[in-house]
Length: 601
Image 1 (cartoon, rainbow, N blue to C red):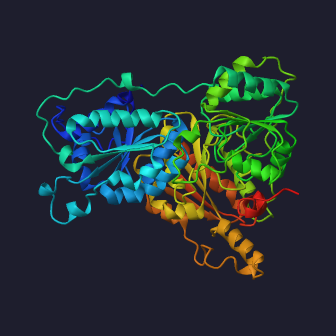
Image 2 (spheres, rainbow, N blue to C red; image 1 turned 45 degrees about the vertical axis):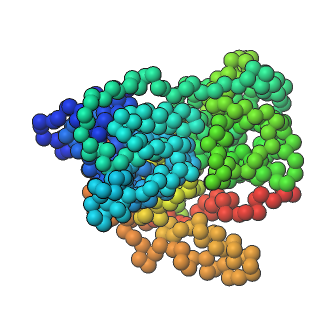
Image 3 (cartoon, rainbow, N blue to C red; image 1 turned 30 degrees about the horizontal axis):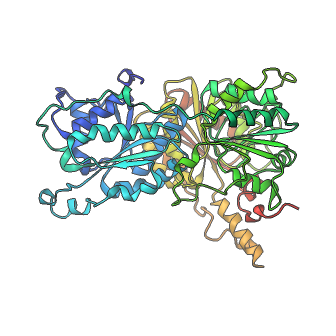
C-alpha cells in the first residue's frame, strides 16, 4: 500500500491546533486508525452529528491528515468526488455520510458509482441504537433499524459492527470487497454510541497486508485455447474494448493484441479511453449508441471479442436487430458477479459462444501470451483533425475543442467528462487517462463532483485536468465547486451550454411525431432560458473564477486562454460557452430512438 502520510496537505487552513491526543481511547479512534492503516488518502464529507465522534477522531486524534477531510456542501458531491478519484486512480477513497438523511442525499451518486463499478469506502452512522441514551426527537429521527437497507441493492457489501472490537474486521472486509474486481462501493454504518464509547482494553489492529484483494481470475486452459483458435482463424475479427484498467501497461497490451490479430477496434464513450482512437485499426468514432461505421464493422466480422464491453447484448441488438448474430462471440468480463436482479444494469442477455468469466485485462494478457507475436504490418496513428469551423458559423462544440487544443498546447490533458457530440477527431484519446468515461448510472448533477475528484487525483501530476459538462448537469450541482475553490484543486470546467435539457427535447419531439402531434412544442418545459442561469456568476459565488457567457466564436480564443492560465496557476476555473443546441443532433438522436433495437433492414 502507498504511504499517504507523506502526501502534502491540500490546504494549510485546516491544520488542527496542538496538542493532539494520539492515544486510541474511543470507539471512533478505532475507525479513524483503520482509515489510516488502509492508506485512505482523503475522506469527502458533509458534517453531521451522527458521526461527531469520528469527526473528532479525524481532527484531534489523527490531525486531519492521512486521511485528510475534504469538506463538501452536499453528500451527493462527496460521493461523486470519490467516484471521480477512483476513475482517475483505480483506487478507493473514503466518504462519510450523516445518518439516514445524509445517506439518502448520497444515494444517486452511490448508484452512479455502483453502475460505473468504481471502488469507494463509505462510512455512515446511525443511532444511538440503544434507545435509552438517545436525545429526544433528533436522535430518534436519525436512527434506522437497518440503515444499510437503503443502499443494499446498489453496494457490493454493507455492515454495521455491534462492538468496538468488531470495527476493524468490518472495515477490512469492506475494503477487501471494494478493491476486489468487480469493484463497487461498500458501506459500513457506525453506531453513534459505539463511536463515543470509551475503550476499556487495548485494541489489536490486524495487519492490512494480510487481507488484500485477491488476484483477478483467469480463464480455464481449454477456454483460453478455444478463444485463441477462433481468433487465429478469424479473417475479420473485431475487438470491443469496454471497461478496463487505466494503466499504461494494460493500454499497451490491448493495442498489441489488436495489432497482432489485425483486428478492428471499437470504443465505448461510457467506458472512457481504452485504446488510441486515432489508430488506423480503430474502426469508428467512440460512441454511446452504435454509429454507422461501428455497425458496418460488426456486421462484417466473423469473430467478435468483447473485452469488458458494458452492454454487449445492446450493441449486438443494434448491429443485427432481430436477425441472428452470425459472428462467433467471445466475452471476457466478471461483471455478472454483481448482478442481483434489483437493477437492470445487467443489460440485455447477449448470445455468447465462449463466455470467459475473467478480468478483461487478464484475458488480454493471457491471449497475448498465446497469440503469435508477428504482425501483418506496421500500423499508423492518424493526426488530429484540422477541419476548423469558421468564425461566421454559429458557436458549436468544434469551436470549443479547437480553441481548447490551441490553448493547452503540448500539455498532456485528461478529460473527466465530455459533452455529447464532442469531436474526438480533434482531441483523440491517446493515453489511458485521456478520457475517464461517463458517470455510470446516468444521474444528472454528477459532473462537477466527478471533475473535482479526478482533478484531486491528478493534482500532483503532469496532467491538465478538464471536464466538458452540460449546463443542466452543472446547474444542478454548482455548489460542488466550492470544494475545488477551498482546496485549490486545479481543473478547467467548460460548459457546453445549450440552455436546454436537449436530450429530453429530442425525446419529446420523437413522441410527438409518433403520435401525430406537433413536434415544434418539444421545447416546452425543457429549455433553461429566459432567463438562462449565469453559470459564470454562480461559479464566482463559490469562489471559482468564472468566465462568460461566451456567445461569439471570435471571443472564444481569448476567453479559453484566460481560463487555461487560471488553471495553470493552480486554481479551478469555469468557462460558460453558449453553443448551438442543434449541432451534433444526429449523435443525440441515436440515444433517444427506441426503434434501434428492431430488426435491421
